[in-house]
Length: 244
Image 1 (spheres, rainbow, N blue to C red):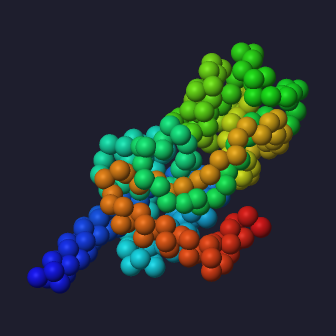
Image 2: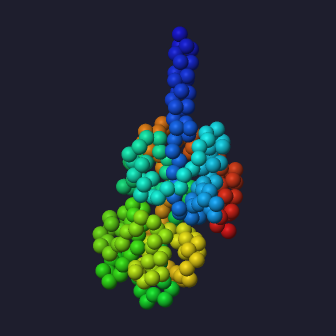
Image 3: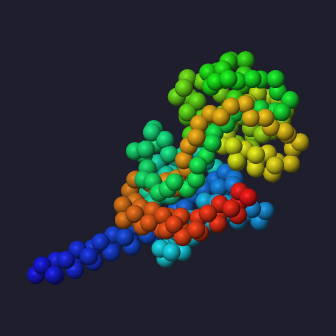
């Protein structure tokens, strides 16, 4: 009888895993190079795309990844079931909103200005000066960080690429963004914009976020495969492909 119960529980566990498999999940990402972005053909590419594709190839799950505006995908993962969004900065305010697999990579937030700017900052408090305007990306962790630190001089946009154009046209004085993706996005913009880093704001970690309804079995499975990628050298190979 005990063996029968054990077998029955094992079957139920398997059914639970299958019902939460990636065939039922929505995989969302955004234009956030070099981690995730559309290539010239519109196909999702980047560090985190390669990592997620490796993970689902090992778990046997298959699904397509869609590039969406951050505000939309961030709303969906909080309000719909079976949602996966990557990469996302893991913060205290977000900790209990999602389930997490990672970290995928480190991410350094910085304040950029035009190379010709005369602005000098010695601390983050200096950037609160209302004479300065700071471009932010709506609902991005860096924007939320500034709001939580009582910044009143932020100018939010729904597409981070708008900040590049606004900085170029002197419509903002500074731009807060991840250091790597800021440089890549400016290069892709093909504008003759030279950047100057004014301040290192905060070092953060990027993760894969899951909606709270997704089973812990799925989370453990993904984390195990990510850890294996890191231990067998495949993770470093992916990083080298985009960062060297």
